[in-house]
Image (cartoon, rainbow, N blue to C red; front, top):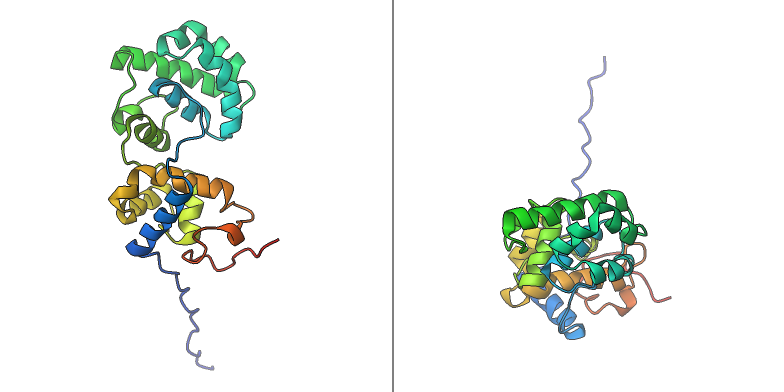
Length: 230
């Protein structure tokens, strides 16, 4: 019987290293030059309507949510007014966006909780925000950042893609990416980081075909298969 030969192991796949802190700072500096005052593209009038808008934006576009909430917020921009409108009324306003039935239930439920548990005011901690129906960590971070000026980073699909593709903050899960972004982002850029990255992912570093030829950080980005000019 022939003795088995030495087993052949596949060479370990080499991981592209992440960006350095100095490179990360340059990334943000360039994105900040393009958009000095980045803001959410969701329309809202106060912290409460921001909570509702962000909760409605799950699996929906900001444009679609803005169309739906234009009429909704005109008649209900407080949790009290939303409860008075009722679930049927909310559903009628948001029926053009995905999962509108469940979202209408959540809007009414979170409005009731804000009144009963928080005196009608939107809570200002991540833990309390995440107690609201339909509000997860991402939504809570958006509200803390946009409404209250906290230096939080909400990792959505755009930020997850940009962070991994560029190697700014590679990670296998949104929580891992969030932690790495917080660690590598200079303090001066923390508040705007969420908006810069999401807008870059939405308009330049697109999912199917990143527009590398017009990317302000293409020379820093570690993405190997850069898209050539059309």
